[in-house]
Amino acid sequence: MKFLFVDLWPWWLAGIIIGLLVPLMYYFFNTALGVSTGYGNLLKIAFPKIKLKWLNTDTFKNKSNWRFLFIIGMIIGGFISARVSGMPFINTGMGLFTQKLNWSYVIYIIWFFVGGALLGFGARLANGCTSGHCIHGLATLQKSSLAATVFFLLFGVIGTFFVKLLVLAGA
Amino acid sequence: MLKKIGYLAAGIIFGFALSRSGASQYDFIYNMFTGVNLKLAFLMATAIVVGAIGMLILKALGNKDIKGTQIKISKKPFNKFTVIGGMVFGLGWAVSGACPGTVLAQIGEGKILSLPTFFGMIFGTYIYALVAEKNNIND
Image (cartoon, rainbow over all chains, first blue to last red; front, side, top):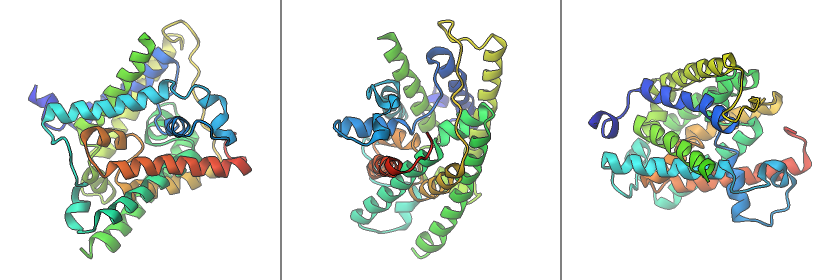
């Protein structure tokens, strides 16, 4: 059981399980695997009276629909994983980013907020994120997802190159 | 009710798998983008192949869901915003060391700095809604 609950899974095991979610989501719920649209649900739950027309399309008619429950499930999944593997309840670091830098928390918060804003805005412009485009979209052989995946990865590499060069190297 | 538990369970499986494989770690993503360790890329490639095989099996069985309804594959539009959004998203991936799915697993793991990423994502979604108000983007 240590293999499943304490050690990190080999990449192929997680790949198989996540890959299976694509047909399973279609089979059981007749819906495409995807996470980022659900952030629209969260926005609407936080600001129910929001008037913007995109947030009042049919997609968000029921703001606590499957996308919302799926998001809550993912948080619970992370929580269960942390408990069974013995991670601390609270972790104030973010890998080698916080290990190498000695910034104040205010700057960290701004940094990650900006990163999140780019993710949220970019995912909506591109109409999907890593799960919706890279996994679901490529598994269903969509041209749009191939283009999105290429640019996700290309700009991930370029972005990380500059983060390494300009931010982490000086630390 | 059963369906709601199903949605929740699917999310739990996804979040658990992301966390147990290390995909929700900053270093995992950083190491993929610097070419040091490509485990995450292999993980994604495996998921795509398994997903594609699963979709072929569903197709061979008549493309019906559990209730017998025809499965409707969600078609994603392809236009210039796919490329622009892809670039913006890629930069966000590099800056935050997370994606919209792994940040949720990070919250569950108790990583405090996942919260600004999470709220940033909601803010970015709001900015999209503002931009979409005056421009025809994907509809």
